[in-house]
Image (cartoon, rainbow, N blue to C red; front, side, top):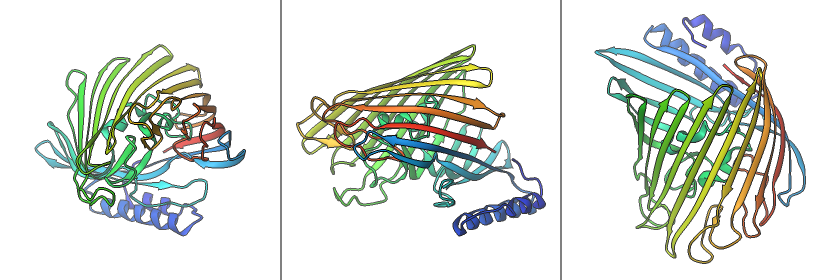
Length: 378
């Protein structure tokens, strides 16, 4: 939705909002649109995603619960300004919309940046999803709902973090990050991110930092990705955690198959903790209906006895599997309704749980989920 004049923004500002925080966020967004177009400098776009499900969750040791769950609904502004000689200013401000409670946590707590783009690529700074996360997120047809593959892959989901918060997850949107994206050349492209050690870890006393990178190759209906991420001094003052991920997807006709393999390696005072995982998904379209399926398998953690980072634990009986099946019906190009079911089967000594909207899983439990919902993008 592009705004070419101030009156368009004023109509958006008259939209009904039920909470003060959401109204304040929209007011700021509208003011930004009006200001930018009054100067006729930026090409600004207001966009968003409203994504909500009615869920029944159980099997986690906490009983069965019916609830409404927000699937990371967002609202944002993005734009660019031609600076001449092939150089372009790029910017974006994106925040969460809590569709189930009618609130908004922040105007800029999601992908938010300012930077420059040119024939040499794009460089920017701000808060942004890391290349390791972004490399395979689109391979999961249930991302970013409660049933997303980050329940097992990546060791949990970190929607906005820095280098001293959620030090177990490799599925991250990082604060204080610099990123560079290459242009595409014969199907190849790359991304590199760096988050400097701005904060002192209360656990290690060090200044942890992060590097994340990915390489992608696209040829028609085939996509291959390789991603790597390292966390310096996250667990101790002198060690580095690493994640490796290799993925591919194939599309032919109305069917797409995707797969990912991942290895996480944490370094602790007691030694190295390693875990391998894999994921496969299938999407098949029948007119307006899409049939969806996804299977994740996490292996046993390997390392010193009793060592655990997040949901990754060492020893036998520490693996898990998650199966999700569902269907989606497209009411239009931007609106759809969906239904899906998901179940995590933990081994006796594992405690994996749904990564977002977590109901709380007990050791060896089998969390389950049924959801019916609607999604609209604008």
